[in-house]
Length: 220
Image 1 (cartoon, helix red, strand yellow):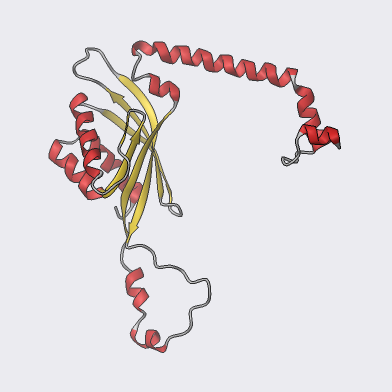
Image 2 (tube, one colour; image 1 turned 90 degrees about the vertical axis):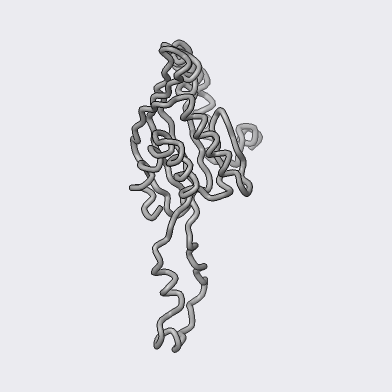
């Protein structure tokens, strides 16, 4: 990839909505040979040739769900850490199970590698070199090359309620989880009210110093 932000939506659609030969060519073009894949249902690890396992996962994914409705909600690129964040909404169907569909939303985290890598930056001033001034710096030629980015790892991150949608039709488990989440919020409110003296001590005695415990404050 030359421009990960603009190219990744097309790449994701090729991985999930294309024919087998295009799907495999996409993986071999944009994933490194030692790329890893992590999902709540499966994991490959990273080793030389692990890219082949990623192809098998995507192939089985497409066999189970020949038609995938997919939308890219947003893309963010942390260029310093070479990390791409992609918000994905998809409707996953299994052809062998009538009326099965799982409309899920998740975030894909893609760790990238750059080729050619950036040359190391010296921590001290680079001395003047007359050869570079007259004939052109060797590093200028290198830095002028357009870098390409490849996927080193893919992690699909799901909220628990989204993950439950794969197992529960008609939102039964997701509904129960929603009730539990509201109940947990109520417990947090009750706990904060009952144990307000702890907050008072933290604010007025400890002073927010994380290195001191309440016991330390009592002992002086």
